[in-house]
Amino acid sequence: MAESHDAHVYEGMSDAPDTPDIIIITGMSGAGRTEVLHTFEDLGYFVIDNLPPNLMLDVANMSGLRDGVGRHLAVVCDLRTQGGQFGDLAEALDELEAHEYTYAVVFLEASDEALRRRYALARRPHPLAHEGEATIDVVRRERELLQGTRQRATLVIDTSNLTVKELRSRLRTAFSQLSDQQLMEVHVFSFGFKYGMPEEADIIIDVRFLPNPYWDPEMRRLTGKDEIVRDFVLTHEQTQAFLKTWFQLLDTVMPGYVAEGKSRLSIGVGCSGGQHRSVALADETARYLIEAGYHVVSNHRDLFRAETHA
Image 1 (cartoon, rainbow, N blue to C red):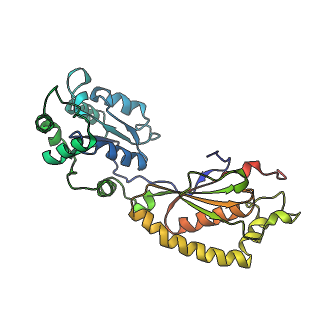
Image 2 (cartoon, rainbow, N blue to C red):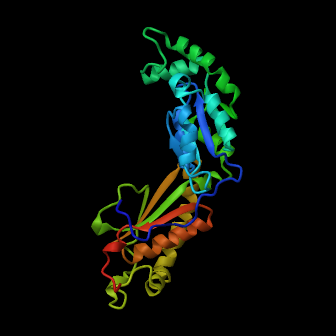
Image 3 (tube, rainbow, N blue to C red):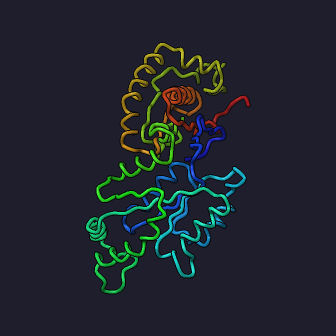
């Protein structure tokens, strides 16, 4: 989507005061490390996959965490990068402590049978498998090698019988003070149908049926950001009836998206040119959702195309 000049965030994500500087994600291959990494990315962390332990302190120092300007880190340490030339994870954790970084180790495990079944369904070999080695034997060998790492874990999660939604919920509970509703980023934007349908929108509402300020010469070169246009659109009897129903619809569907564990939801409000009605109503939609407790990002896709007095 083309980026508007007036894109802005209505409400920012806030960190819990005791959020660790660095989350280290490790554990059994096939136990869900990648999904956990995606969850922390949605929580606003800077994420790195398969980071060698001997680079962890350098990455922490470069991230800006010490200056309070960097995002928290979430890194995956695969068993393949532990030991040997890549350094030992336990040593890396000791280095972080010595340099006064806070961290948490999330260790993921699953039963031997659950892991065997996942690799069978994925039809790919275990990353640590030797030629001709049975998957179940590799799993047991990996489990033994990770015993020392498991003992350093802050949080151990058995994913054998967890759905992705349940796993994400458990991590959010452990590492964020925000509710699932606050964690879902809602992107509300206006657009003009004459410039094309927005493919990324989950919900599209067409407001071309409402009275159009464009036909009033006094408002033609204004936008939905101008008070006279906004008042014209929002105070019209037809708009008032629409907003009542529109907000009732949002009250019905939004909790369902939250319950599904959706991390991002995009709502497009469209009129003919994306200048008057859609702009005013996208802003009104964003305002309503903010007041309802959602984390909202808003912009106006086609407003820069408008021929205005500015």
